[in-house]
Image (cartoon, rainbow, N blue to C red; front, side, top):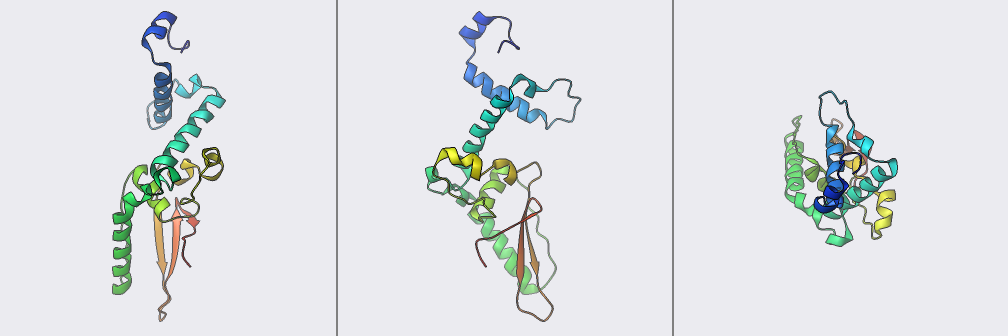
Length: 179
């Protein structure tokens, strides 16, 4: 706080340091969303260790609140069950009609993350019991970078009833929990 305030008594009496620290990290993180000239980088207010520690907290928070966390009995991804059912219904209809189709949906990370976890795309649906293991096994930024997306691509050879499905998370091929 010394880099931003010149009155230590004021800070001691009026500033919740933990809340201020957290809010400044949010400002620094969101600054990258601005296209304006960036003469000052708020990340400069933090050490590398502080930035990493804030990411650890943030990553664990995303996991606990939107992923397959034991803390929520793995229920949070089911907030996207209706959306997944709609995807499946539209895919079934496209397959039945045989017409080339594309269905696009747009949403924020609070939709993409639980949907990816519900679908168990790659390692998204992993259940992690020990909070200290989250950073090693599950990283939020791999699931929802800016412009994140989930794609299903269906392939069918003419004359064949077999349909192959390729799943992509952010243009990277991922597995589904089915053959």
